[in-house]
Amino acid sequence: MRRRAAFGGGLRLVAAWGALALPGAATWALPRRPLVFPRDFGSHPELRTEWWYITGHAESGARRFGFQVTFFRSRIDAAQPLHSAFAAKQLVWAHTALTDLQGGRLHHDQRMARAGFGVAQAAEADTDVRLRDWTLRRADGRYQARVASDDFALAFDFTPTQPVLLQGDDGLSRKGPGPAQASYYYSEPQLATRGRITLQGQAFEVTGKAWLDHEFSEELIPPEAVGWDWIGFNLDDGGALAAFVLRRADGSDIWASGTFRGADGTRQVFGTDQVRFTPLDSWTSPRTRARYPVRWKVETPAGRFEVRALLDDQELAGSGPGSVVYWEGLSELLDVSGKRVGLGYLEMTGYAAPLDK
Image (cartoon, rainbow, N blue to C red):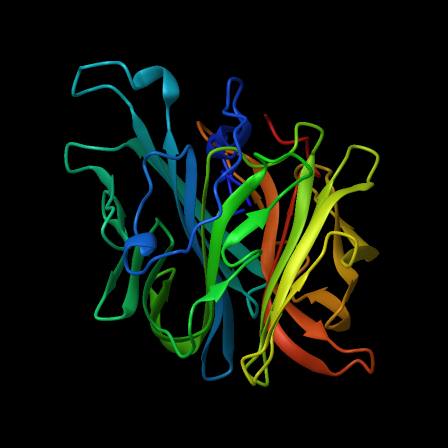
């Protein structure tokens, strides 16, 4: 989804999120095609919107953190006919966030630039995205992320432990009733994570697990959508669960889907009428007054679960160009008996204001 700005913010939420459904967007359906790796790990500049999105949790002794690193690429149609090397034909955006559970605080930062001149790039052959000194690269089968802001820095290595998980119809994921509302979409759950978190001058050597999403699309969400709710959980038994719902202004569902992969490798794709998100408890942001459900009942064909945020205040309320307001944070997944069965991320958009389409 646009995240997942693209899925407007930077999926996958920023002005880039708005690039998901810009006026004049194409209305043709994405063709069903096999995803081919390593080529499809890389960028797809012929499509309007793309993002690489990594979320996870990490520990250093008793200290526990959640983290997010997201890079977006947006094609700017108006600039495509221009011949100047300075034309902003492709923009690269990035968001990063760190949840410090013990400190009870979310730290976050963002940046953007036009591609080119050694400042920003999104390579096509494999994952290699950079924005100044922020990078996400794949080499020798592993990912490496490096981002730094004024008060925190993340330096992670991610090692896949499972095959790629194709979302939707073997990698073609519907995002609405229209034929053009779809993306190519795959995930890499259960990434073994090692690295270093530096927070306000203190360094922590950490280990943990992460989840990677990569989506690319020409058009994404229906015009009546004001936002979405999304979850991605690494299950404690080695499985993986992802699900999302797109919402209208009145709160009703437009489209829903998801994927479950069991510890034995069996895969199950959910139809749009098989996923339901029901809010249970909410938190109101003191900054934006947006009211976010921070505890959900989520019903899928793979089971009924409760999603519970581990910190209520995980709202990203940026400022400046490309900023959007959304909630994205470390959460736990509980089964019907109240037992924790997974750890991952919940993302909620369109609560402070409808997505700018």
